Amino acid sequence: MDDWEDAEWYRDAVIYEVSVRTFMDGDGDGIGDFAGLTARLDHLADLGVTAIWLLPFYPSPLRDDGYDIADYTSVHPDYGDLAQVRSFIAEAHRRGLRVITELVLNHTSDQHAWFQRARRAPPGSAHRNWYVWSDTPDRYRDARIIFRDFEDSNWSWDDVAGAWFWHRFYSHQPDLNFDEPRVGRALLDIVDFWLEAGVDGLRLDAIPYLYEREGTSSENLPETHGFIRQLRRHVDEHFPGRMLLAEANQWPQDAVAYFGAGDECHMAFHFPLMPRLYMALGLADRQPILDILARTPDLPASAQWAIFLRNHDELTLEMVSDDERSYMRRRYAPDPRASLNLGIRRRLAPLMDGDRARLELMNGLLFSLPGTPVVYYGDEIGMGDDLDLPDRFGVRTPMQWDAGPNAGFSTAPVEQLCLPVISAGAYGYQAVNVAAQRADPGSLLSWMKRLIALRKDHPGFGRGSLRFLEPAEPAVLAYLREHDGEVLLVVANLSPQPLQTALPLGDHAGSALVDLLTATGLPPVGTDLYPLHLAGHGFRWLRLEDGPA
Ligand code: GLC
Image (cartoon, rainbow, N blue to C red; front, side):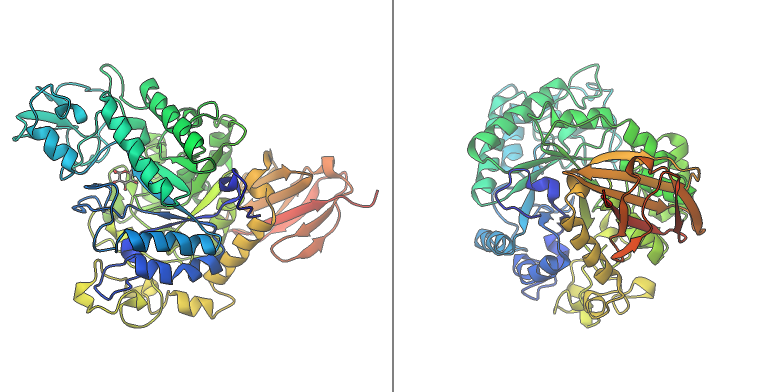
């Protein structure tokens, strides 16, 4: 399904997250750019994804890889210019691909003209008030520190202003002050700028932290939701059909608040589900997934979760208990260099020990659990990570296109590359690259293409209801997705051992079963428990079809 006119297009989407900087270098300077990205749109169209989420590409000192924005309505010269962004959007649209960009509302770079003006403006003046200042670093003590490996306070001293300023992330990222109404208006102008340029959706970065209030955690405050409602009204009025996606790393009951009553964001990431997919696999037990989805409230009618296995950040372990975090670290980050802040800075393939069955299983869940799947660039070919790089750069290395110099990413001399390509070991570009996998029908890339195509053929995966079956074996995760008369059944074996399960499908007695991945029929459903064999880490996508009356 890809109905360009459908205002709820995001519910059927398959989103591909990409960094312009490390995808493809079009001008040979060692840095990815819009020319390169545009030239590689066919890879994305061929993969079958329907929307491209671009990491920040604006002018920036790049001390947080571009999330430190110095100018919201222009393009970092490394990546090209506005004309090239416009042509990228047009070329993406021509191929039926939507474009989602970043809207970083919470903070700017300290190099932004607004901050430069604020720090020099008289205390108490309107210009000073664009940011959050204080005479003491003692306010808002109940707000946690997010980048705890790098910062020990949310306040930093500014010599120019002679005052402390507030920042939830790096100290070079001062938080904007949403109590100053001009800030909100300036940000709506930026929204207009990009939506007029044809952008289809905006990811609202770090959205829970817009306001701060004494005696609270300064997260998820009613004032923050008020601003999002204002933003949504503005978008609906001027740009109907465009989408807002909340990045709110919160427990389900707090994350769901970002949909409001259908009057805030259209989408929000389901952060707590993500680590539980890894836990369920590691423990060969479906319970972590069942528990978190049981704790997940129903959504307003047109709302949709965005679900993911990995992204450009560390695999965050904020939304788990201390015991669960210790388990995740023992199981998935035995090398201490892999831990960062509260999470794990590794890519999907190494997390799965390069094991094909587990990679397929995890993607099989990503593409069939409720929500819109988000694939992180490079994970479609099983790229690895580089723990020698600092911060989160180890999971942001250049895309591996072929076995030629620099993995086909750039024609620049190797020492000029913005980040080193992974060039040794099992994940080196000689072994893992797009060209080789495109030529191989048995490759992970070819398999991902088939999975994505199947997902798009069956809108129930994006829109269907969810009902878990609970067979006797804890390692079996089984659920029904129903939509518009179609019944889909997903059955996954979370354990490495093959097993035989028996599913309570009595409600559907008389139905025929078709295996969607192999396009073969199975014996019809009877009134007894339905026996099904699963390979170790195997999974099936089945469709129940009404039998003869
Ligand atoms: C979000 C981004 C992350 C960035 C942070 C601060 O969490 O995903 O990469 O560092 O916001 O902007």
